[in-house]
Length: 566
Image 1 (cartoon, helix red, strand yellow):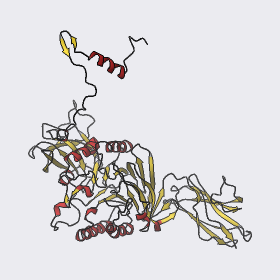
Image 2 (cartoon, rainbow, N blue to C red):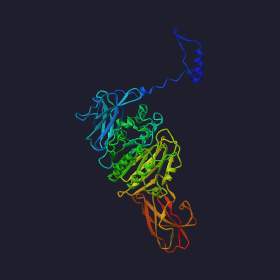
Image 3 (cartoon, rainbow, N blue to C red):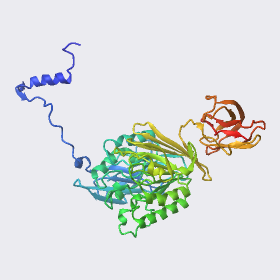
Image 4 (tube, helix red, strand yellow):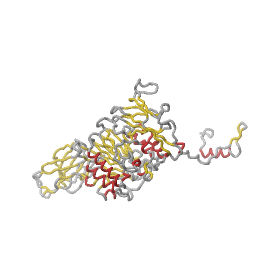
């Protein structure tokens, strides 16, 4: 490339401009000053200008009602009065724009509430809420909100089915910090991985400062259009409070069902209104709790009694509970003994499936140690702590778990995560991924109609000593029962008896630590992934010889402890 056609490098260009700038450049008789390299950076665009409301609707968000198969709430912010705040809805058409809806297809709904919230940015943000009622179950609708002149874009949502239907939801721990920079990619990646999600669960501390208009604006911007088409189920963390006062934004933004504890006689009822509630959605009972009241005995007792009533009288197969302060803490010297003492026994007694928490800015997942059935399987409640934002705490080695009878199975620190939960008739699949989409942790909960449950690690490809036997000292011809977990329902498993030479825990085709291998039979795992097989030992076993039961399937190659012949 010749000098005439070679592009300037930045350094060369700067040098030439400097030379040119030694004196004013005269072009056509006009004087121009040179470009000022190294000048001061542009000023920061003011938050008051970024987040200032206009007549155009923004912060559009779906919140569930107590009857999500036949109704839906939508909230938005706009500079308009209650007189004009409204929405339009119709069953989702194939096209809009030049294609006009059929006559009578569009229903206009006036806002049921319009609430101004004073902000520190010098203006009020007014939130409007409509409730669409009389909707059809499992039906897609299209809606827009506005003032009759200034409308949002058309958005879509689908009502819940009247009974059980498989669905997915997303769960986040604390966003709280770096909401405008680090959080959006987490929200977007989660939605990219589960665009069919019907619910987003936030376990508190959505923002850092309870009454910050700027931070709430950043949080809504991070979610963007997702909030306008996926129901949001959030609960309060400690940062949704300023002292003992609930954020003035909470109720106007999140008009959750008024079906919580009977707190109305409490002097400061406004500080706990709509912070505990429940929603039954397609076979799952979602229960949101307020763990911020754990230091107020009367309120905690009322909430605990309300919780037990919901767990005891629950028509749904699956139960998910969310609150902010963990039963078992991940970090530092944190500890929530009141939450653990009052709620954890109820979770175990009534078979809660998932407990989703935040607060500790790290990841931890575990269960009661007494629920352990095998190296990869337990039958207890799954407790999870997670974080979606950019503020991080160090793990404490799981001492709050192990010190209180639990075990922590998976942890992570200095990572942002999102969780995808897929609900089916007999199974819940849980997976946690990092902000970059990589897998971190996962497990399967299987439950039959009798309420029996197994929880098994995802993708273990198990090997090793994971088969239990009812006795390890036997006589020839005696009956022996082997039990194992972690299979797919109806998975075929071949049962062998290995005569061992040593005590390897991995005996099998890849480990010739045995003298002989005798096929015993084939068994099918049950609906929970459990296998139990009884068989009669050969009558000609030699005294003091040793054996293992070896189970071989498409997913596992596992053995029992050594069995000695008496």
